Length: 132
Image (cartoon, rainbow, N blue to C red; front, side, top):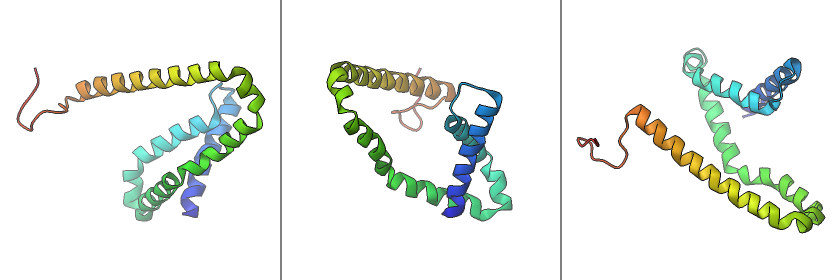
């Protein structure tokens, strides 16, 4: 697990180095996630050489997901510490949260529909049945 966490943090560090080194306005952790995604896409090739790589990274990912709620504690503490800002802008923040959630849901549905049409999958139909 320590090796996998180190690998995840190294990808984040790589993203930070690239973002700051090239002066990109993209956050380093986002680039790190993209690098990690590329690494995971290529992991079948790596897994053939290092069999433990894929299994250990999967177990670490599942462990992180199991305790994902702990990652929200710092944000919650920040909200409580700045309750004066919440009191002043609470209604606007609430509207922004509801609107952004709605937009996210719409974009997710549209993306799913587009990808399923491009991939040719027919969700909700029988095995031999096709939609026209």
